[in-house]
Amino acid sequence: MTSEAYITAWLLYLCGATGLLVVVWYLTRSLKSAALREPLRLIAAVCLLFPFPIDDGYSEWAPAFLMLAFEGVFEGGQAALRTGIPLLSTTIAVLIMAGMAEWWLRKRQQQASAEREATAEFDALVEDSQQQAAQAKPS
Image (tube, rainbow, N blue to C red; front, side, top):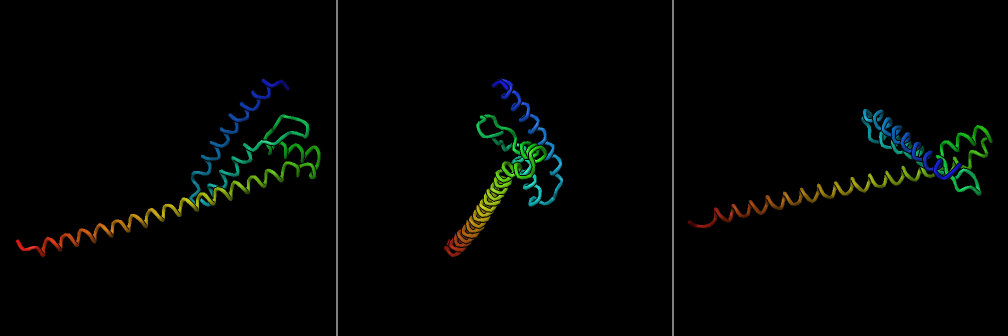
């Protein structure tokens, strides 16, 4: 395969993968639970976008889920482990990182909410003290 054909194949694949990700996004939009919706979207993205070298000694890469399927069908289950283990570990790592990011964002939102509440309470106390001071002043 020439370099131009390889790049063209990847560009066409990425266009198709983008279309599939849009479809996955569309299909999962009606799920009420973000705890189910977001991981499904991430798993689809990892499966479609994770590349893997086609074999030792080759510089070309292919989508890992396709490599997994072809190696599983044509070379057997043991050969599929060569691609399956990195694909699975990458999927787990992405899900863990997304969970950590979600936890961090929620923590930040809670802190910001607590700061807004504290500021509102402080402002109310200052306003009350100013009103009491104004009422206590003899005119």
